[in-house]
Image (cartoon, rainbow, N blue to C red; front, side, top):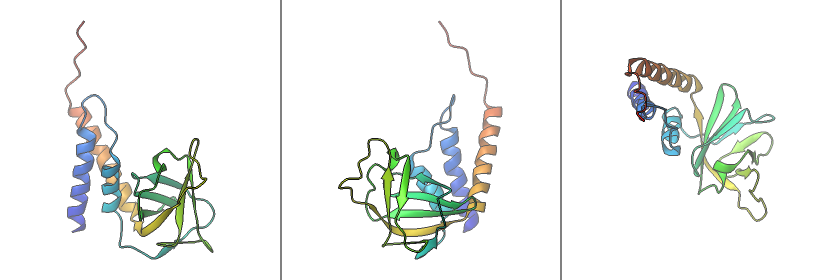
Length: 161
């Protein structure tokens, strides 16, 4: 099953990577969400967060990945749309005693032009651990496939006047 999942993820990456001839288009939020979901484990009740986040990635309005350490990441799905998440320059996560808990804690997007006055925070519905080793391996396979495709592509013709 894991092998089939890896093939599906690689196929998605290849489709995204080979979609354009002159430049590689950026994956849509739905494609990025599918990529992370393919590397996510079963839902857990909570995770420990010490200090600051190592990074975060919005995946549309209903999900995001947070990196608590370089090799530890969590897929957070929200109970509803998270307004302005794609425009945020930072986020805050409510948590008690260094533990982020599903269906209890929230994420609040912060950034220029994003008002926190009267904003309803984004409630975390589910938390799933990310297999970061498999994720990084898939990324490397996609990079190698894209590199091979670029080497095999015919040279671009110069524009005619």
